Length: 306
View 1 (cartoon, one colour):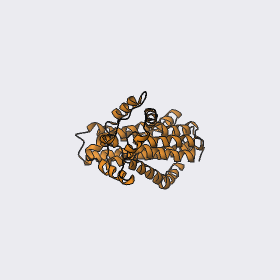
View 2 (cartoon, rainbow, N blue to C red):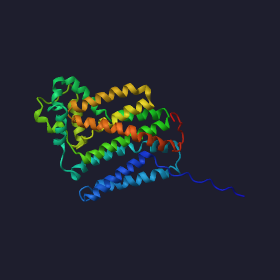
View 3 (tube, helix red, strand yellow):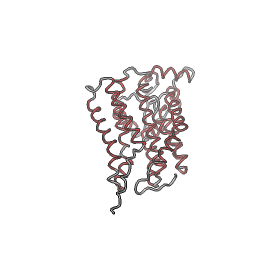
View 4 (cartoon, one colour):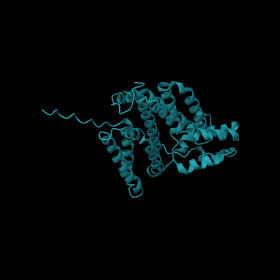
């Protein structure tokens, strides 16, 4: 008697794939709801392709269980975060054309007794500090990526998946905020109140200009994604990579200072980012931990940290 064939492995979606699929589906729904397909057909068609990819990859793993495919699947969502951010830069003004900077400025002045934080910081502004903080600000994406990479190289499947899921959720949460509260930031709205423009020493203007080209006058202030994601990274490093906690904490503090010092963000953007990071850590981190704990271990992974 021929023994029956073993059942095919189930198709498991990673939480990062489901989150990204939901985010792309949300953007596509916004395009359709606001009748923007004629204005952004490239984004709409690209999103259909990305959704097809996200649905296909988990099914392919049943046939391609090898280390290279596992490596690809663990990281392929990462560039999609940047794609979604760039799409949002183009879509936000079409969906919500009225910026809310006036409201954010009013909130800042209420908190600081009628003063603007970026103007107050002029008293401690000097070129060398500006240069250093601009470098820190530009290094933002390296902060969460470094945490995930350290865990990955250690072979800690469980902690890597938890941290990447929470961090990616933080990014998407900030992107949704840009649609609800579009704002260009004090660098543009309060420039007339500043006594002098910022200046650096060596490459300050080069870095700032590169960021300007990449963001293309983005409405990406509230909440501050820099703060939301960096604070989540600090919490996660304390929980899963304690030996690097101090490094991530110092890095995050400098990022926080840079956002207002360099006039990219209002103070209320920072508070909103901190508040959302705390809410994610308190209420959603246990949910993600439970989901990821039940995922099967792919080829070549250890269960360290579980």
